[in-house]
Length: 126
Image (cartoon, rainbow, N blue to C red; front, side, top):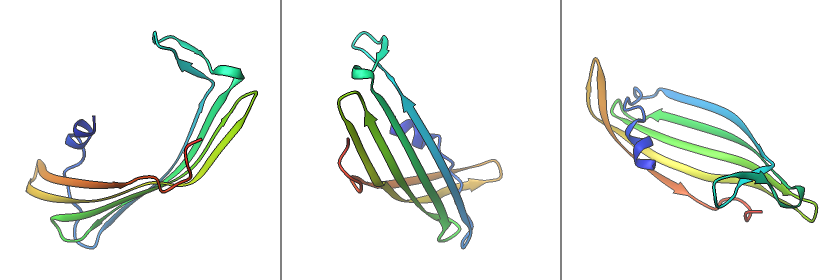
């Protein structure tokens, strides 16, 4: 799955000194889940799950052929039901990487990209 998404990622690198910045907020809510047969059912004990995450993604042109990449999340997660409330929040996984343009022409580009994921930068899962 990661390989497919990486293959379709943009191969263009940024010009030296240029930057691309993206800020995003995502909200997820669920009060149902899938059972072993793939059918949806209500979460046990009238439960629900909520996650809000904030993401900052940046690319920076180190040279015309080399782009540095970083992505960081802040997550706020809550799982609640009639018996218990579990919460976790903090910095999520951090991605650090480099993209190197191997070939470039007016209609496209070929690049190699590598990312390192720094896991578990936040509280234990609820």
